[in-house]
Length: 406
Ligand code: F0G
Image 1 (cartoon, helix red, strand yellow):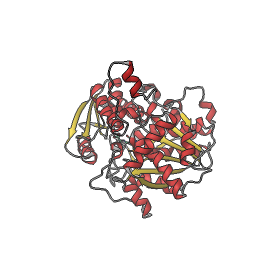
Image 2 (cartoon, rainbow, N blue to C red):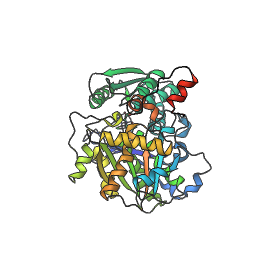
Image 3 (cartoon, rainbow, N blue to C red):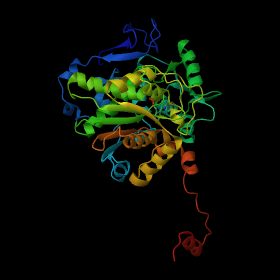
Image 4 (cartoon, helix red, strand yellow):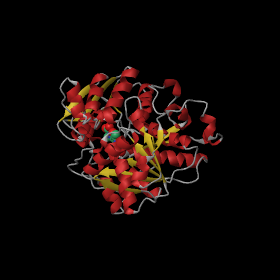
């Protein structure tokens, strides 16, 4: 196994408790220090013998691959956009399509590592709070591992595809009378009592798997470092995971500069973007977050402080986009590139368009948008915002009339 230790991100002390989600000394956030000495002797292409995907990068992961619970996650396409880039005014615009993961979102990257670790330490019941994707992913990986699974979802605010997945894979699905932040507080109480092994991203093993998206982007760009990586921010762990991957590639000497990490939030749910605008290192939680992008409808992001560090340290940026801008961007990506993403993922595209117009993004930059989840996750939002279906009688005449064929 790759040598590693859990340390407190706030006070720096070692944490030996494998179940801890926060520091026993100061209640700070945790992180994992992986011993990267063996990787320093290698070059990126030395890993190319293994298929692309999370486990290609096992030398950066704190779990023994002998225990891997995997459904072949990662290895998602990186598209060089054509019409979309021209439309938003950034010629070198790429989309990393995380909707191609086994359960349709980037969460599978973290879950293969998190659930493998849960098996290593003998957990019986795993669980998470979720706006939907984490629960869909955990339910699938728990099924694969043969573990019991409970998911805590904000009632009425989880997109249909995600809810169906959690039910389908056999999790106990609790519909909590509250928002995501309330559901997470409850799941954390169960975890503190050791009655559930928590697999939210506050668990430091989860972001470790999520680092792999950055390793893949670098491989797919043949190590030509992009100027900027843009991604949606909800509970704020993914942007931190990408940052951690960047710092590790710097440490092993595979890259020598950092892409500017740019976090996009929805206007009704934007504590990180607000903190950035004020130049603060901490954020003020939002009491009643609201947005069509239900995946990132989060007012009190657990990793918000880590996200701000990632943004400041890379010279990046954070801003918010409106629901209308999100829907327009989702549609643009679909109609111009044939790529279907869910609303939260489209926030990254909407963010590029806005920051280009503001002059924050230069037209000559090489920009990668991480599009985190598949369009099929949220069919209702798509149907509400598309042209209606055309009722049509069962006759050639009616078809020709409906299609305006003269
Ligand atoms: N995009 C999608 C599609 C998501 O599902 C999430 C988070 C994010 C972006 C934001 O990532 O939280 O690491 O900043 N979804 C979580 C969930 C909260 O429960 O599925 P983050």
